[in-house]
Length: 87
Image 1 (cartoon, rainbow, N blue to C red):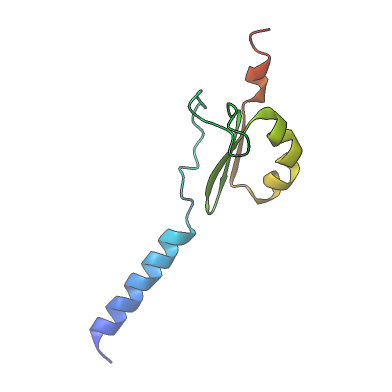
Image 2: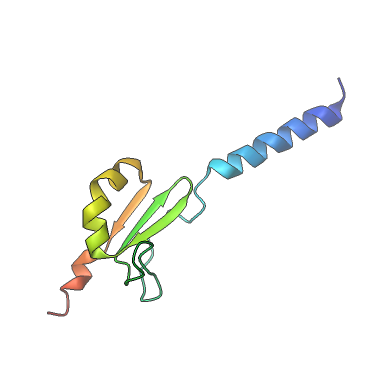
C-alpha cells in the first residue's frame, strides 16, 4: 500500500471533520441591527448556532420555534430582554 493513499485518506478525514464543525463561531457576540431574522427580515434578537451554521430570529419567531431549536442548538443566544430595555 502506498503512503500517498494514506495521505489522501487522512486529508479526506480532515475535510469531513471540518464539515461537521459549526460553520459559525459558537461564542456569544452582541447582536446588532445588521443581524436580521431569517424568516421575516426583522431585527434579530436570537442567534442559534448549530453544526450546519447559524440562524437568526426576531422575538416573535424565536418564541414560535424556540423550544425545538434549543433541543438541537450548540448555542442559543437570547437577547429578547433588549426589546423592553428602553421602556
